[in-house]
Amino acid sequence: MKLVLATRNQGKMKELQELLTGAAVEVVSLADFPNVPEVVEDGATFQANAIKKARTVAEAVGEVSLSDDSGLEVDYLDGAPGVISARFAGEHDDAANNRKLLELLSGVPWEKRTSRFRCVIAIAVPGGPTETVEGTCAGIITTEPRGAQGFGYDPLFYVPDYQKTFAELDGAEKNLVSHRGKALQKALVVIKRMLAR
Image (cartoon, rainbow, N blue to C red; front, side, top):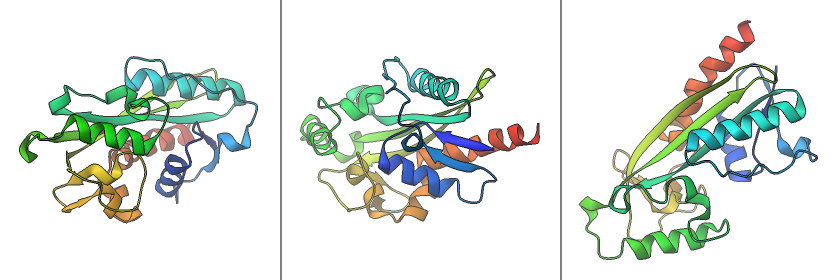
């Protein structure tokens, strides 16, 4: 089975490919389908965006498509940045997003900086069903960036169990604990069920 990852985000692509290592599927990305139009993520929820991307790509390329939409939810900010995590400070700019988040949490005590990463994965069969799964990872927003791995908010997202930020974890550690890793483990169950049909 060919599985098209409905993303052009290289950081996300690398993470998803690592997580799918060993699955009995041929994993390809949108880089292999340059004519697929950019999907506008205008849904009000992670689930709506993930479904829209997966369905659009599956129908455009005629292959099973996997899409995720994920983001950071900070309790002190009533769940923001949420569904606009990638565009929190305007156009997709990780450094600007991190600066804005730190500014909004300036002076907020450690115990009130609780947050979670949430990931919804949608798997769409062309002309068939779409299924979704979800994963979350709880953490705390640090007061300054730490670490050089990962992307997005990873340098600010501290995982108490590891006493490190996502950006300080190596890829294998992050995949074990991350929202995307947890969602993808559930997605693999769905994919295996599809393969068995």
